[in-house]
Image (tube, rainbow, N blue to C red; front, side):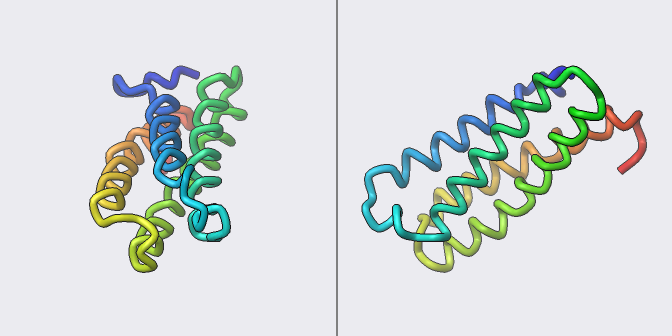
Length: 122
């Protein structure tokens, strides 16, 4: 199934987000031991992987499975970023940027899932 949904390569966009998250925390010793940071890194990479797997899958059922997982991860990342902000683990600017990024891409991910389901089903 194509991932160039609505003119955006979603897998590429989520890979860029995961790359940014990694880059911010890669040289910070304390980040290696912080569970919130580790979850943020893990989930952003899993989101990219699931979206890429949906893009590369050959059947509708497999694509839907990967999209469902990706949507769950994306929805979990927003409150995780809010928690990171409250714990001063991310700057307000980065938190706003990453949440905005997710909020722009989530509707496209949901529309991709709907298209696989045959249109109108949520």
